[in-house]
Picture (spheres, helix red, strand yellow):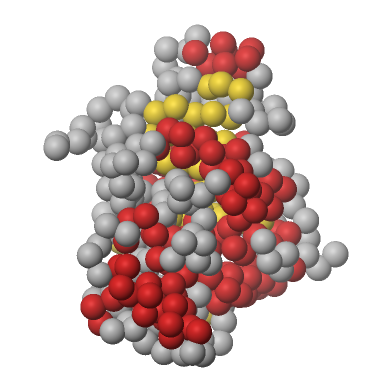
Length: 353
């Protein structure tokens, strides 16, 4: 099926906590990039005021992008492991930290380039983080390890870059990293002003369609029972990367550690896994044509249930959007920037006070 190009009129809906009067105000503006705003959160939020000029456009005068696929910035080491490096565009005291999904690394999604430009105009830096789990390292890592390294990155930004707070932006499995990290109550998690979950989908439901999955889950479970959870699975289990029995079970088994966004989890199970996020402003960007979500899943119902379990998160449904939003780049940037504008200026909790 041919998907509409990103230049066509955006069709996506946003659920915020604006009152009904905010909804009326938004819908009265013919130039608004939102198709509608309805009540959804307990705290009132301001409606979007429209598009910024050239928010995702011209690179010519951007101090952070030289030309297409060429970023200007600083590459720095934030931890003791060789993989613990990050790339920052813009030199500001507020940062959006991008956390990618399985096999991702730098420049993981098409919207990062225009996002860096748009954030620079808002006096925010974009930080693309590499973790030990980046690229093919995800199979021998864990959410716990990712969270520890994410805390080290935020600590570095506070201590070395005088950060005044961050917004976490997760893509795909990076959403699990953020949810897990915010549940650790680590010292630097207090510096997180808000979180954005872009494409929070179930690895388990996607992998359940693969023919080898059931047998490999049984093998992983047996290895874990025998105390061999850190040993590698057969290559057939995950041809793209070496993977331990523990991580395979975490990603593929019912109620594994990574199983946070599955449609067959009950409301209570979702609340148990996601409910701690209610203390931080959160936005869920859900692609309504995500190729990693099985056809049998009711996407509208699922995203509503996820937002409820997250404590009333802001919901954004992007029609025709694929998993990485490569066909909805401009829409992705506008949604993220609008959220950062509204939630970013809020005060932060200095972990060292």
